[in-house]
Structures are given as C-alpha cells and as structure tokens.
Amino acid sequence: MRKSKRERQRLLQETIRENPFITDEELAEKFSVSVQTIRLDRLELSIPELRERIKNVARQSFADKVRALPLEEVIGDIIDIEPDASAISIFDVKEEHVFRRTRIARGHHLFAQANSLAVAVIHDELALTAKATIRFVRQVKEGERVVAKAKVTGKTAHGRTIVEVNSYVGQELVFSGTFEMYRSNIEKKDGDSNEYRG
Amino acid sequence: MRKSKRERQRLLQETIRENPFITDEELAEKFSVSVQTIRLDRLELSIPELRERIKNVARQSFADKVRALPLEEVIGDIIDIEPDASAISIFDVKEEHVFRRTRIARGHHLFAQANSLAVAVIHDELALTAKATIRFVRQVKEGERVVAKAKVTGKTAHGRTIVEVNSYVGQELVFSGTFEMYRSNIEKKDGDSNEYRG
DNA sequence: TCCGATTTTATGACTAGGTACTAAAAGTAA
DNA sequence: TTACTTTTAGTACCTAGTCATAAAATCGGA
Image (cartoon, rainbow over all chains, first blue to last red):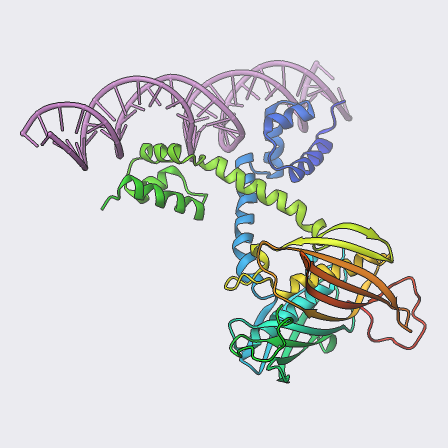
C-alpha cells in the first residue's frame, strides 16, 4: 500500500539519514512513487541532493581527521602550563566518552586527560609514563567539564619525575592520580633496564 | 614556469591527496595547463574524478562512524571471555595511537585497553573502575599487536572486585595493572560513600 | 633546421544526478 | 460537481565529468 504523504516524508528522512548514498530514483522505487514526488518531498523537507549529502559527509570526516591527529596529541585543552612545575587542562565530557547506558564517563578518558597532562608538564620531548596509581573518586557525567591540575612534586631515586594530577568538576574532586614519569634526557645508568616506558 | 609532465603529475597527486575536493578546472588553473591535460594526468595516474573521490572519503567516514561508537565501548577486540573469571583482548597499535615523533604508543591507549577489559570481564552492567595501579613495562611501537589478559583475582572488604591485567607483545610483558572494580549489584552498605566510580 | 615522437589542447557526443519551472492528471473531501 | 491537494510528466539547463578523435605545440636528436 502506498503511504500517506506525511508518513512517506517521515520515512524518507529516516531512510536518507541512515543511508545518505541513496539516489532519488532508488527512493522513488522504494516508496512506489515517481522521482518527481521524491524531489518535491526533498524540497519540502530541505534535504539536499545526493551529491551535496555525500559532500557533507566527506567534509565532516575530513575535518574530523584533521582534528583527530593533532588533537589526540593531548586529551583535553591545556589552558595553562609552567614547564616542570604545573599545568591545567579542561576536558568536556561528550556523548562519545560515556557508557551509553549510564552516561557516566569511561575511566580511561579521565585517565587519558590526566596522563596527557602529566606528559605535557614534563619539559622533555620524550616524556613517558612509567607507573601510575589512580583513583576515580566520583563518577563524571556527560556534559560535565573536567579540570585537571597537574603538579610536579618530586623525583625518585631512578631520576623519574613524580607528577600529581587532581581532576575536578566544579569544586568536586573526581579523579586523582600519581604518575611516575620517565624522561629521556636523564641517561639510563642504573640497572633498572626493564621498566621505563608508557 | 610550467613544470615538466613528471613534476606536474607528482604535484598533482600530492595536491589531490591533500584536498580531494578540488575540481579539474581548479587544478588546470593551478598548474597553468588545460583541463584536458589534467584529465590525461588523472587517467595516467589512475586518480578517480572528483565525485568518486568525495564518495570514497564519505564512505570511509561513514564506515568509521558506524564502527566508532559501538567499538569505542571496548578498546581492543575481545577474543575470549569467561565472565567474572578472565578475558583476553587484542589491540593493534596504529598511527593514531602513537607519539608522532617516537612512534611509541601513548600510555592511555594501553590503559584504555586494559581498563575496558577489566570492565568487560566483570559480569555486571554497571561495572566501573574505582582504583588502579599500573605499570608500563616496556614501550609499544606502532604496528605492534598488544594482547591483554585479565584475570579476576579476588575481592576487597568493600565488595570490590580485583582484576589483574597483563598485556603482552608476543611473549613480552609490556603493561601490567591492578584494577579495583566497583559493581552495582552489591548494595553500598558500608560508610565508604565518597570513592567508588570511574 | 627539419623529422618524428611526445605532450598538450580542442572539440563534440554522451553520462549521472540532479535543479527549476510549467502543466496536466489523479485523488480527495465537502 | 467543485475546489483543493497531491502526484506525475516533460522540458531546458547544470556540473563535473567520460570517451574518442584530431589538431596544434613542444622537444630531442641527427
């Protein structure tokens, strides 16, 4: 049976959202109407033509890709840094960072922000995490803004740097971690050969 | 000066790689040759036309998007799991996971794999990480495959579950961590109110 | 300098997947 | 039946090409 205009347009939107690569001709066949009807529908619903839709998808992914690599260098935006002393970054928890069901942020994103910040605060091109002890103090929900504060607090006997990172949502502590950082410019000289990078 | 054919074709490939959205006409102008020359070049280099290029970019991003959300639920592919006992996942280190300079995997990806696995092994819908102590034993490079093995080893007094995760590249241990996991089905009953989620 | 090969440009016919517009036909409700 | 909405048809035009043919320009070598 041929659906009503309203129903057809609803399904049309859904169909195109799911598969932007479908042509008017294919849509016409799918809904058993003429190509012209489909075009009228698109016009009424302000749905652009196939090529424009594809271009939009492509543009988005291209922008994402450009953003993906450099931005992944540091998780969160660093808003203040004093090399080898302290640093602050912010990270907005979005849909892609949470468990679908509970909307609670996955731990590794909070870890990633803190870890990135710990790497960044070290004034060394090859700083890497050797060890970390972390604690998720309270859950962080979608939409919340996490402010991570890193402080260099000392050094180990092996020449590693200790960085304390505390992350807050507003005034509340949500995450805290102690990071033991390896740095390259200190030549390895003691027999601790098999555990120093991350 | 107009470049030689060879040089022009080299630059053409590069230009299109950088910006797949450029038309033959724009390319012709850029290289001060006719549109036909550009088309001959594309033919010789097997570079598809603009619309096909755009479609390819879009297809890729579309596939990525479909993969992105559900796959992000777990970092790495789980290949074996025995609920509340053990689990194994593999994670291939790619370009996007490493420091550009050193090609060494960023710590948080290894953490994410281990953390995801620790969450997955717990037979509970709302399992969350409460605490973790981790160690990056050796660096992992781009192209390496990391196999993470999680084992439930015990419980704390608070009803939390302890999960040990060891990650290997081949036979070599590269990461190890102890995760203290919070689970929802154990009603909070002791006064430990302010530290249980991640 | 001329020859032949390579490279470049021009031209025309055709394509997909449309837009924009006009007009007619079909369906529907009072 | 009339009035209105909805659907279909048809035409001209568009972009960004393909494919094929042919002519013009350029280049290297004897």
